[in-house]
Length: 469
Image 1 (tube, rainbow, N blue to C red):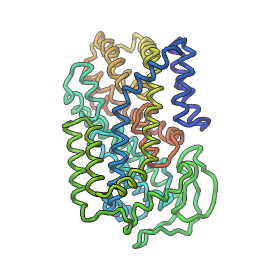
Image 2 (cartoon, helix red, strand yellow):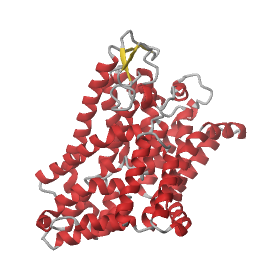
Image 3 (cartoon, helix red, strand yellow):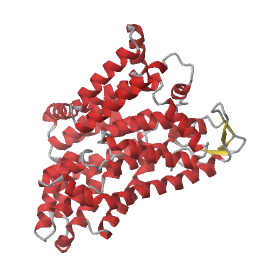
Image 4 (tube, helix red, strand yellow):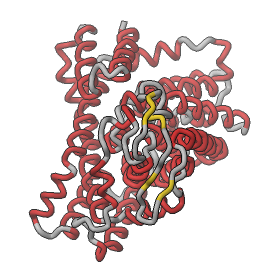
């Protein structure tokens, strides 16, 4: 019964947000509450929610102060040279822009934190997508997949969890998987190239003048390239700086486009190297785990505000300027806490995982690594990494061991689903991505799921061919 309710709850949630019948926040709260009552455990709903909120509170705190920190860095002009460099490299070519998005997200992902990656990537690329009139779901999809592949670095989370759960060395898991992961990353870059060519055909001839304005006289498809439901099929003439239909979330992007204004009053050019050093130190401290990430961003945000804006009214103005993003993202995280709290508290997650493991035919025992790789796609999408790696993987590994499959092979196979996992509604970082990009979560999901699943299968195939899985 719990298994059926669990899958039904997830399916109901996805259908409602993808069809835009409910907002993600409302669906994350109301759907699990209803299914908790249906499971006969409505009296414990409060306990489940509090447990979920307690577990995600550090993540919410980290996102709140990280948004303030990177928002201030955008205000003071830290990323302006990056954006100008990308503009010069891309030369208004949508294909280069999409490939550049994938490359930038992959490089920044080396810090091991998805939220940081998405904030930096969107901050740098959003103005360019808006100026060229490109589909924003292409940006969010490519960034999420590139981050998903790179999220497997030992300090990124999944590899460390797999190593801990199976009592293995993280390096022994990760290093042999590098060739397969590189194939996956090349697959993301190849997909970015194809999507970029699609955007180039849609937008026609573009050019960026010396003042970085964009001009076009071509007739374009508004909203094309964003998948079904993104407003594709409507023809019209418009300046390239306009929106791209529903995929843009209905926002004209004016605020972030103003972020490139060389005369904006928030710039602090004399403090550029201080801000660059502060950001580099912050990321290094995260990688070295000198302090918990929420504490690092809290200290970083306070220091950035105090040094760049010594006057109290200026500090209040900067905080107010980013309050919308803070509220939207932190609210989404706490709403997700209701969803995860009910899934775990009612036992739905354990029941779903057990049923899936039991459904594996006995004849597939010697191929449990392959089975684990395939199962990692839906399981890491519908479950948290903690739930999968600490709850399901040990069970799968035990079944594999009975057939001679080593724990190392099982651990490596368990990493395969990460490109899809990074777009899961249970991953707080994805709300940073879609929130900053002004993209509806349902649009992002419709666009990215098929491509992310294909990337996962590419990594799995490469792992088998290289003999690491």
